[in-house]
Image 1 (cartoon, rainbow, N blue to C red):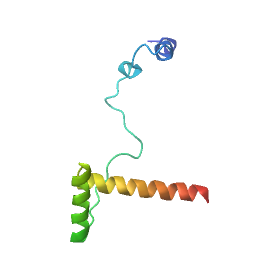
Image 2: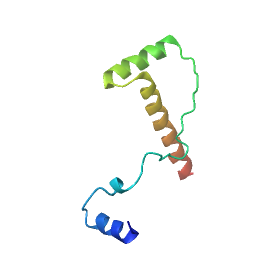
Image 3: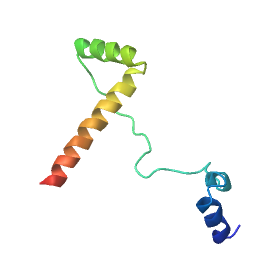
Image 4: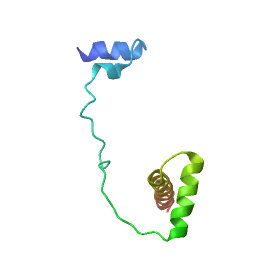
Length: 81
């Protein structure tokens, strides 16, 4: 398929253009997992588990979400300086 044909499909909103790509080998930059071990006091684990149950995700997901939010905040603060 020529690029101009793909452009027309996209511009005309005819189809989902991702159907025209092989997405099986897509990799996000800096997104490969790196295993990290960390010890938490029992009260933290219990609090994490309570929050995880409350929002319906795993403990690991809660930790990742909270760390991502904090790091995003820190990065945006650093950009303002």
